[in-house]
Amino acid sequence: MEIIPNPKEVDGVKVLQLETGAGAAIRFFEHAIGINVPRSRFLAVKATSDLLLVQVGNFLARFNSIPSIVELDRLKVSGDVWFGAAIVLKDKTSITAKPGVKLEIPDGAVLENKEINDPEDF
Image (tube, rainbow, N blue to C red; front, side):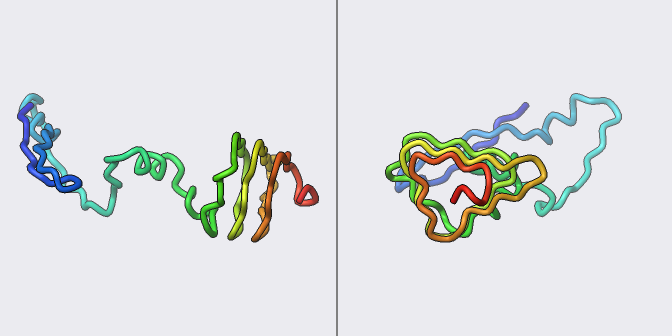
């Protein structure tokens, strides 16, 4: 495949990004056709955070705000868990929603060395 040069500037440094055009490979297949797909149909993955959004489409919707994790040593989250605003996570915290249960951590919750399995555990 051909290499496509893409000059750009990253953090004030001029770089030359080399890309391969997947469309250029079409010439190697007999009877191949191309289809024009609008950009709105896909999300470009250029960073790990982009990949996370592709893999977990509703990930960000589960957070009213990003929890404070400055004093967090270990975190385990599983199941249908939703985070309110101004949450603080400390030390070793485990949050597990039972199957079929939506577990909502309330605004302002401080979870330190906690194991949360039910709403009553707050």
